[in-house]
Image (cartoon, rainbow, N blue to C red; front, top):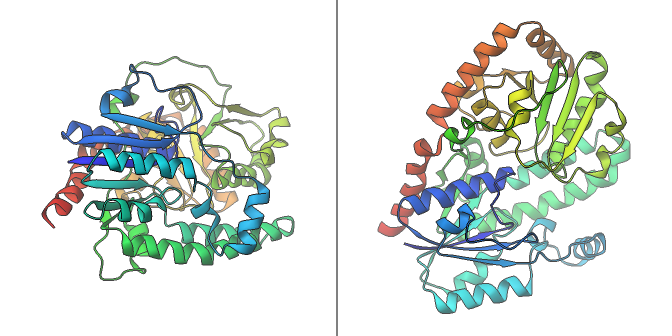
Length: 401
């Protein structure tokens, strides 16, 4: 089949959850013999012929991302009635590239990766009325925004942000409902997300294709680094609100009770709200790194103290593939299989989190056992070879339906 993928950013190198998922999808579809064209926002270096993603796609077209500043956000908040997430990537240049592609190629399927880019499916419906449209929902976005608003409401200095999130929740619900009802197929990353999105269209079949990784990639030797004794590691895109909240919450409620540990926060674009915690000599914020694997391998414990979010945390799959002992919250582990959850310690209260870290630091043997179990589980359930058949079934259902 001829497939056009629309993405909010170039999914290579795959260094964020969305990029990891999209790159895995591209690789899985290409290996199954499908013909892929990729249209992405991208503000980095030009894609080279030697890049692995170039080898997987017949054609790659990129557009420089539009400017999305506070003035625009405020204007649209007051006058548009649309959610922020639906507007931030709406752009004439992208639309023109899309029109040009559809004039020169008759695509069988157009797939939007995530809600930010999914608004273009409405345009595709007019350009290619016979194409099948797929919405790949990275998260149940309205549910995520509702949790954000609730948590911000507990902090007086975040009340304005809470009000903003509450307004966005109502708007996202309407927008998300339209996407789910209008797409020919909707892909969810977990049964939990599918249950939330199914409320928009109870009679519609939603497909669950978990986010997965290529586990063998994590077995390859990579550069080794040394971290201080009793090292905790957290990874993720550090301007993403749930990740920022997780590190601030850990710093405020748990770190004071762990005087002998060192925390390394690995991830691109650290948010200004994290600036003050970087002044703690027991915390290192790396910013962008070439490879997160050496940090995970060097960690004594991988932590995921998330209080908000939905979907599946690819960071946890990566940590499992690296053989980490993991302490996570229920929200962080949401969407994972029962077997995966049994391979980590799941606690929700700050005092429980602290005790779990202390117990594991005092028991190296237990950390080793947990790491071995984690690697076994992720290979069995979350390697793309085990998940890719589910994705191909979605395409077959469209071909036959």
